[in-house]
Image (cartoon, rainbow, N blue to C red; front, side):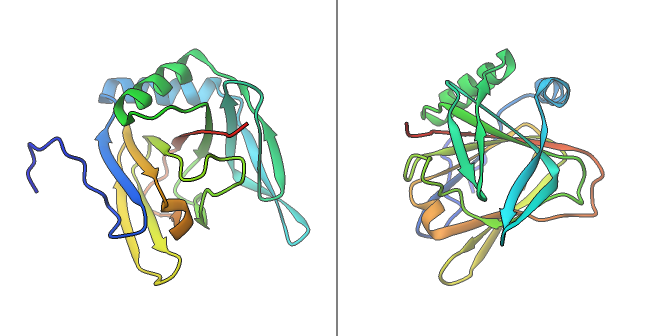
Length: 199
């Protein structure tokens, strides 16, 4: 690989596009936004209804957007809060880097390595079909994995503090992704996923 090339390669061998842009933010800025978001975002434990049972996760979430979008997943519905100044700055940075436009952001707070996310795809009907989802990672360095829905092949990448990952095209149709738990870190991670809700 040419270390001086500005071309971003596709991590997936087929059926979708995932681009890892590396550091979106300097270490200083990444530290700043992590600290601000940990203390100013309206975090709430995530809820899901699975097989008729209401599950409350340790992981916390928050949902922000241009308007009070309703967003439904796992049989629960959230309503978007107004953007904070910090989220708007990050949104502009992400839009400039990816060349895409976003109208909402789902944030996840993982308190330590014990908390993760099971295999899933972001293919809810509220989302723009084959739209881009830009994921910004702050805090603990974590592994992120993809699994093809048909042939079960897997690909993993390490997401660094202050980095940007972009998923687009038919990725959500053909691939699952997850954040596996790990004993390698006890530090928190904040993940921002900028996305487009179709009104």
